[in-house]
Length: 269
Image 1 (cartoon, rainbow, N blue to C red):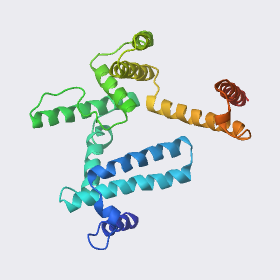
Image 2: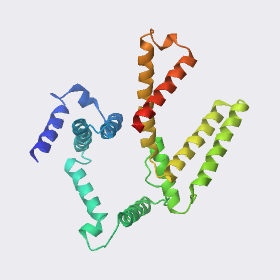
Image 3: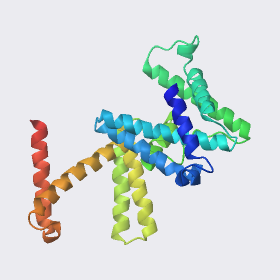
Image 4: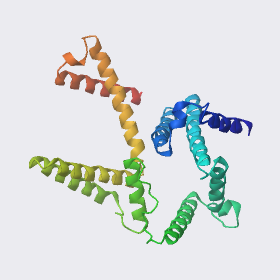
């Protein structure tokens, strides 16, 4: 495609050792990673807001990250853009034998199971090649957002039966972890102990989300957006009085509850 070729050429010029952009020339695989993560989140944000024009722009920014990695890979004789495309083409064909070969799959649930089996076989083969024992947790990237990684670790463990069958025991476990956190507070435990207990609470919350078929990362993003919207309304209320700094905690809480009730009423309408 002409547009893709132009994009690859733009990237080459940006990285040109003599005439390129100083910032682009200085980047490495490691320094680009935070930008890649940020662009991925901006894609998710545009989708949640259903801003399709913005989504087109954000997807372009995310594509540029891939092109950036491809250019650096080519400079180091590791891989290039075509290698990346060939690799994903091969993987998609390999993992969809019901489309590109003779395997027969009826439902999306069967496809999910088959997909996981194909990935498991690939991970096992990789472990054997590297001369190490295989773990069901292999391949869960450490760079994932913590909530997302927790859910993936839990799903992997569940595949071999390490899981509760119902939601109620997860709720019981959450209460147990909250009680342990409360005890740590009561005895004024060390910051390290607080850190440990709070992590257990959050990990169990992710487990609960998984059993409720809720994506914890998306749920928290939604809660963040809800908090931001309500807080801005509280700010706007007190702006006429010189700002929130002049308000008491009780006054701010009253306005917060008023905003919540108002939003609830609007949603019911």
